[in-house]
Length: 297
Image (cartoon, rainbow, N blue to C red; front, side):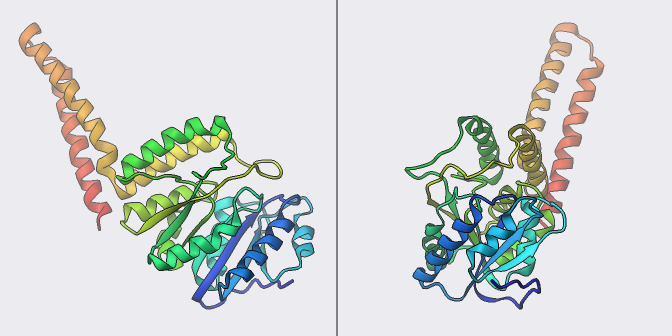
């Protein structure tokens, strides 16, 4: 087992980042299978980075028991999924990054196919979209995901098959451009997806299966869903503020028109609302224009 915490100069190759937190039941098999897949694929050079996010079970022992060449980086305290990916980005040797989970949900044998598609099509990112024939996804998660996808599609202006898949390959130098935007939690994947799409980078998708996880999920459905919506709003303000503000401008314009019609043709007297709503509409419109100009710089 190789344990190296010192970053190495970036070069051509593939770095696979695996964030791990309390995955003692799955991490050993994940690592062994992943190494076999990569060795048989002919991908060279590659490295596996395991980011142990301060696990408090026997995860560390299971990583050692896998007995494969990998670099282990351990957080002194639990920082979150996104923080683990960011740590991996800082330490990755190679200029192409793959991320996957340690819980057995993603078909890591598809990584060579994703990598081949990424290189052949000269993409900036390829995402393993969980739209394959065998997808095990709890129904309770499908409802909020539907609305999250609808909002994301609107902001990005394109159809996104899977916005937060944890199996993907992307260009490290481009990913580092948005480094300060990445949250420490589970919203990392949404952020990098929206950042690349909103900035016009080439993103493609490949259908993959998705299996029942081994162990207990770390996601809090209500809390994380609310964070996803909040994050999408922030991304819209940062990358495409007009998409976020124009519906409100349109609504305020209709309300202003309704008040004006009522006051002019029915009441025959202008009310405060007839004056304030048009002013508010114009103010928000120009604020959105300024925000849009700033975002394009």
